[in-house]
Length: 373
Image (cartoon, rainbow, N blue to C red; front, side):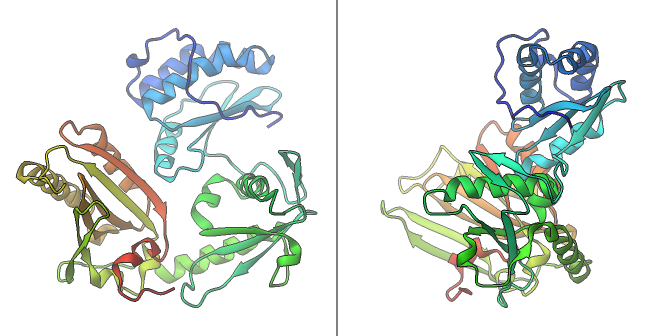
């Protein structure tokens, strides 16, 4: 792509089509097709892209699904490219992919889901006054026998210091995002640490060897966990109680057999549904009406997210007008769609959800008396 425009927030000064007229992917592409000629001209001629294109596009994407960002530029002399991206937010990946999957074939246009690799190993990326390139960057893998399938890499940068650490870390992440592509950056790397070369504890590997390393680790992981299933019908659950600082109780119901399962890494994606309930007892616990609504909601979700299909219900935690339900998942796409649908269609309860990668479920060590450190 010959030029990129930075990611824009979804604000608009004017729109030519009422936003609520767009409710489906098809609606969006019908609208886009109606205006594609003027959009192309302003991009190809480097005109007032913000006013003519971005201010029109942003609110339409917001209606389709909040959290869809975009980049655009000329792919070649005659083709404009629109890249839609979740900007690293895992739960929004599937909505970007679905929207692009329904894109029409239009002359002079190319539509891409998620940022593809856009720089080569010998390329240089500039950010905040620092350079990021093969000359500046090396890496090595951190292996932990307690977490053998976790991909943790340490990246070195010659300009790293206590004063520059935030800018260098962000630049390294941006470089890797552009070097291996957004989807691989989101899904393959579990943990990144950035240091100065003098702090390295292992032999440094050129950064342009990272792709080959990740391909090898991905293949190894897939072969190891293909077909892994678990039936939780006979599992043992524990009721855990604690007291918050304000004196209110916290109650958790947790599948302890799952937390001691040796194949956690086969379900590396954690989804958390947060439910705020208004009607409660004096101690913050739900009253019967709230309890019935939440239990009915949980039962409905469990009917869709079955353990034999790769969605394991780890348990739930309730305290202070909030219940959180936890799932460990083989993939993040379907759980994102299911939880998003319930969040959009709930009137009686305030629902939010998050999806993140935690290959060994370390975020649940608080429920285990003697977790692996």
